[in-house]
Image 1 (cartoon, rainbow, N blue to C red):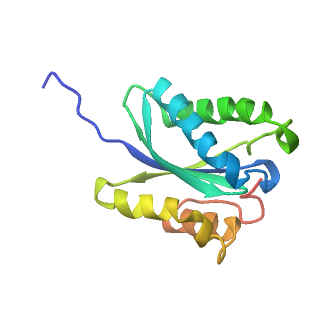
Image 2 (cartoon, rainbow, N blue to C red; image 1 turned 90 degrees about the horizontal axis):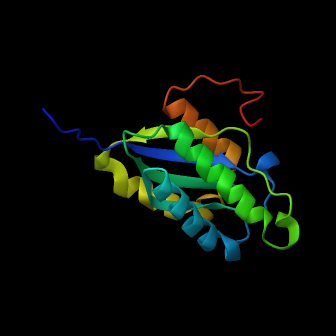
Length: 150
């Protein structure tokens, strides 16, 4: 077979440094558009993006020529710089050092999209820590409960 066929989908989650609630609603749409551009430049496509004041969720399709860590690293670095250029409390903006990513089957893309787009409502009932712990547990990811938010 001379062709490479792939559909690599990832649900990526990362927070602001210290989970500071810096992502104001009025800046999020522009932030997500900016992240889409960075993803495109790194051989990826954001299917959707969403989040709350202290974190972001991305549903990304990443081509086999790129590693998840490269794509997420570029999105975080470039968007951090872009956010720091914005006025007000964003002057020294930083994302957390790490991120979480989970593979997604094509059969559940619409459910993941709905989940990501419903983040505002979702976080009226559940904290980021509770949400991330549930994802890690559901995907069998080992973590230190005392330090998983570091």
